[in-house]
Length: 245
Length: 78
Image (cartoon, rainbow over all chains, first blue to last red):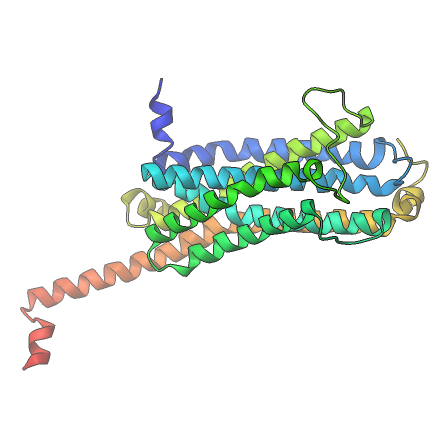
């Protein structure tokens, strides 16, 4: 029963498993985006205060949520690689970073563009936005630190530590709207209360959040495959694979 | 369907520029990165073939030198 768990540490097994999983992830991602976009752009109503700019929420919120999810995944897998010296964990961690950075940048830009007509400003140095910008810098720092080392093992370990140290930023971002006065609005979806958002809007939002998640796993698998090929280039199975292609 | 016509859909109640700019940015980034990461595996395989070719060439040189009993460092010192 536990074999599959140990197989996760084998780059060869993960490569072959990724190959099998990818078509399914791509299909589900496409379907979810189609449904989410139809719901978000065509079916859901406009906001009584914001008008149609509320439709930006259906890309801004999923991107922001995904960026934090990816950061946590990056930090945890980096930590696992650091503590138990599992190279597959480092491969996952390093592959998460570029996607996370892009999605963070998207959330920053879409949030700013949403802010222009709605709240009158592209940016404000309040708690939520500043801590989120720091998250973006952490992603860039992770990638820069990793590429600064010649020895890959040291690079992996150093950037894992950076990711773990930056993990404290995630609860700060999440609770910043509660702890400080912020231009950014508070949470509309809670685990314990009925959501204050319209049901059609909620359906679109949740679909888009899941769509972004599946998109992330698709792109992560592709990235991990490429990273595995690079790192395992001295092994026979990679050689066979490269020659056969 | 929330909108009554295609023009209304594009216009988005006056906020069309902001909404479509955001969706264009997001589509561009997500689709672009998906295609890029897909191409990474193929690029890796090409790079690997070159790497194996160079590695094999180095091994062949080394074995030829051994067979001819030539040690490069000794020749240089003399």
